[in-house]
Amino acid sequence: MNSVISSTFFLTVLMVIGMGFFIRAAAKDRTQVVTLRSGDDGDQLLAALKQYFADRAYQVDRIDPDSNKVTLSGQVRPSVFLTVFLSVMAAVGGLCLGLLLSMVVPSLPTTIGLVFVALAPGAGWLYWRKAGRTEQVAFVLDETTALASGSLLRVSAHRDELESLQRSLNLTVQE
Image (cartoon, rainbow, N blue to C red; front, side):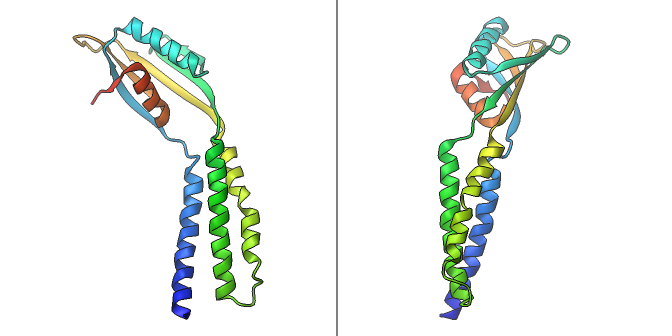
């Protein structure tokens, strides 16, 4: 029985470590730079981009006329579902760790798991604090490239925003 408890304890400790990294990574910045191809000409694409970012509540920060670079910013709201999910996941992991600690170290009170459960909302709070931030999007319409039809757009944004932009404006990634 002792080897079962020790191996279970070891796996639970690994789970808690993994959960800590998962909670930390939930709010990590995932900005990417991609070149997208559109079938529309530059003026049509700019009009579509203006409408798309206005609908998503982005505001123009600055326009650099020398490099044709437009920088926008918008407030990203944290996900309520992910906040609750991370808190529940931390509570379950803490309860498991507490139960195993009370079995491995019998002198500890059996309510040690409840202490970890009480700390679990801290995981959601940590995510909420880090995920709510101002996100920046920058794009340059590449007019120097001679395409048979269409235009190229270099965009720097969060990867989820890039996927949404591609779907909404029917853009393809230029390789």
